[in-house]
Image (tube, rainbow, N blue to C red; front, side):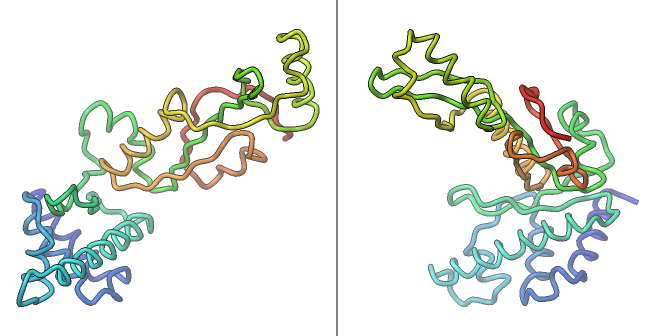
Length: 239
């Protein structure tokens, strides 16, 4: 059987699934996007050719955008249901005014080194959770200074040791004027988290979850997930 026929069979299974049952234009829109998957389809085309609009006005364009969002969510729910399909379909958000393009991923074929590396997270389907260490900073506004501290579990003993270390480091000037904060910085593990989430979304149609390591009670929190652990543990957690 050709790839085209296998893809069409999957499209028909999705169209007849409960996930599209409540979408009035869902099956027709899915088939239309599949038939035009080699091109980007504009909202105006969807409005006229799928929704039956007599004009490509802004109102009908908005309706087409809403229908595409519903279809995108339905495709995600179908994928997360764990059907044993060789192909996964997803609909990325349109880029500017370029329109929509249905994407297909072969879950069994090797599609290059990157896909092969992450294949364990693509099949079988489980929630992908990215776990990272969130940098802790102590700020000294009086001295306009900032000190980065390795991730810790946030308990009072750990905070006390950090304050003692800051006091020794600064000769006592940072002991009472500092306070902890967590800064979002596009570097290191946080940057890696965002790039991974973007790759899974754009290349595999998968939404990732996330968790800060110190907020997790135990490894049982990831029992039903497919975790990606960034960095290393810098503190001991209670079993």
